[in-house]
Amino acid sequence: MDIRTDGIRYSLEDLRGIIETLRSDTGCPWDRKQTHVSLKGCMMEEAREVLEGIDLYEKTGEWDNLCEELGDVLLQVVMHSAIAQEEGIFTLDDVIQGIAEKMVRRHPHVFGDGSDAGLSWEEIKRQEKSDQSRP
Image 1: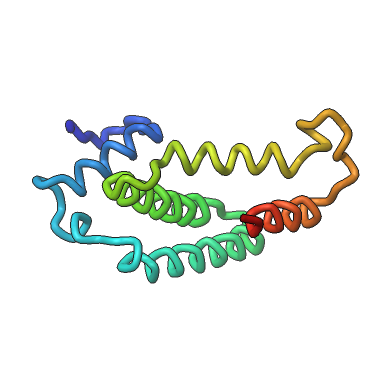
Image 2 (image 1 turned 120 degrees about the vertical axis):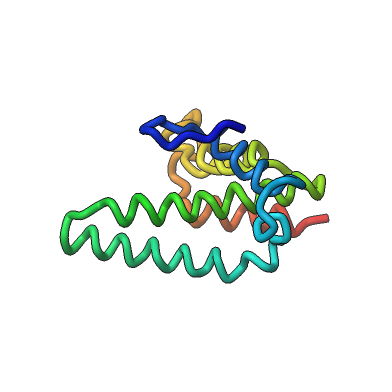
């Protein structure tokens, strides 16, 4: 993969390719050995840094740090998805599909036919959890 940093605009697909390259046999030894478990601390740290970035943005109006920290969380999502794909359990596309379905399902007042428009996010979430616990 030819990686340039001369002002090129990277896409989500480019990021996927970068992670794939980093985890390949010729990639980065540190990235190659990461697992879901080994990355738990990184995910927690990056989420905390997003919260700090939000506070900084609220206080100063400076958005650069928040943008950077959200990128770090996105890296974690892409990395975990790459690991899961290598394990044959799910892909980044599955993650995207799942969250898109959830957003549509939990916003019947926007995407539905109106029959469930009175249900709150929490009521829909409780209903989903109840359905999942049934055999």
